[in-house]
Image 1 (cartoon, one colour):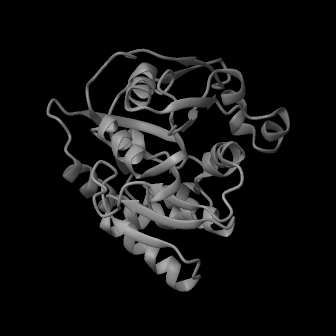
Image 2 (cartoon, helix red, strand yellow):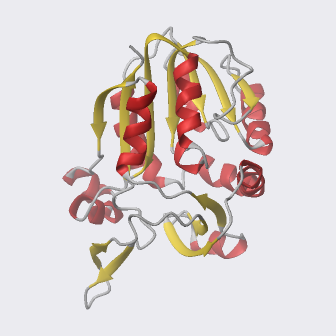
Image 3 (spheres, rainbow, N blue to C red):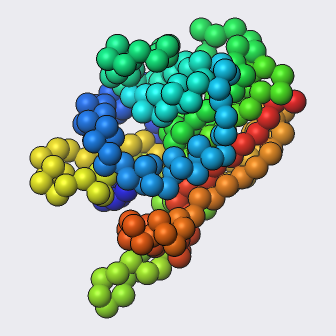
Length: 274
């Protein structure tokens, strides 16, 4: 990802505003994701997350914050009985259109993961969420709803931007050849919500010039603010993963090298409802 600029908001960003931002992003986001330009997802985040999740065949699974359904369809092809929810009606529309073109038995609903009253208690064997829970103003409430929906011994897997590295003061120090060689981190404890504007860095330059950058609401949290609500809600933490590109990955995709050397872009967590 290329983060170009951010706009601080002294007020609290509401769920309604989050929904509107993602509706505005939806058409271009869907097109670019489906063309494979979300390369950090393709070559780093997804391979590690799918390895963590493992076999979902035959399980009833909720994808919380499914977007246009890219990963939901992957899980469905693995044999899971999928339901996807997202706060953006436009993204859900794109997901439903994809389901019509290639029926995989996926149910899509417009909903926030902080209010999933459309589902009964203990409705799902597993909940997955890829790069979505970080985009909510109320992570704790989302965790409580997911806990309610899981059956006993149900698994909860999610990924977020790594809170220890992707801070408000995130940036790079470059060498004389303009190579990004050192990662800078500051503002870790900042609670200032903001809207960041960026594009997929591997999209063709001529395409990036033709479209507006995505506007992404950001809700800063520390690592403790992700882990403690899980524990206080009742989840048992099973595993944490900080995906690191392999040397072979970096040879094939050189833009990953800095994330092998300097820090982790993503954080993956697996916990269980006992």
